[in-house]
Amino acid sequence: MSEYISKVAVFCGARGGVAPVYIHAAAALGLEVARRGLTLVYGGGRTGLMGAVADAALSAGGHVIGVMPEFLVEREVAHQGLTEMVVVPSMHARKALMAERADAFVALPGGLGTLEEFFETLTWTQLDLQRKAHGLLNTEGYFDQLLRFLQRGYQDEMIGSAPETYITVRDEAAVLLDVLQSLSPTGGLLTDRT
Image (tube, rainbow, N blue to C red; front, top):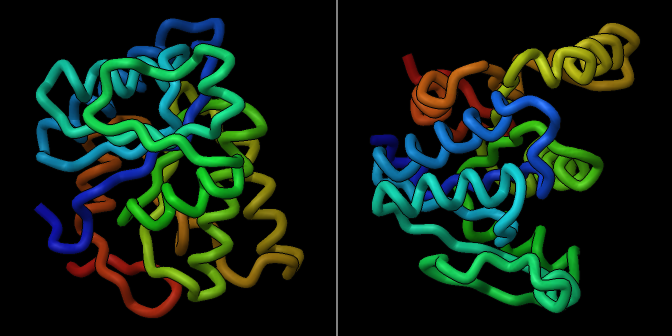
């Protein structure tokens, strides 16, 4: 196990999407996080990919921390069976606490909130405010167009580094975690120790 990563924050959709493969991928990641003895930190929801990743980790005996803003708890989307649920006043507080509690970040397929959360923490790493790994679980090529956009930004010198230098992209949960756990902090970005 990596000495650098003990808690993984997962950003993902509260919806399940149209294809069952998204739910299966979320569950595979939750199981793999628990199997490795890592703590899962996520948005605290019980539906969609959020519920799938948490339920899978819990079913494997994993430690799961949910972080949810008050207004979402009031809408009754909070997961009731977590190891720990932290209720915060706002979405901003959620992101800050998830970033504080996590050593690495993984985004699964999701919507605007998923991307916003992932890119905010990625920006903090690029600005050297933190030294944490970022990964995309690219189920069914969900993030392919996003990765093309980032490559274009790099080619057009709008983004300072090629995407592969700051985001690990894999389509299998176990392989993604293998790579993330092989990284070590070296400045703002992360590099392979081998």
